[in-house]
Length: 75
Image 1 (cartoon, rainbow, N blue to C red):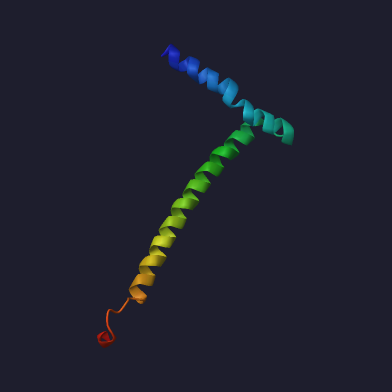
Image 2: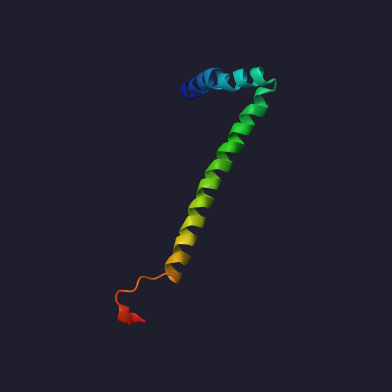
């Protein structure tokens, strides 16, 4: 368990420093920058999934409306 905390501390010191530098440059707190990155991650993943479902629905409707006819006599 101590090894896990060492790895966690390492990533907190070095990984979160990116958010800290961005926050210092913009003039915000690092906590705000971190939470905004988390929220943006959820939004973009959700947007991609919603886009996928919309396209699947659209293709299904298009296939139901426009079916290819194999012959002229299938009218």
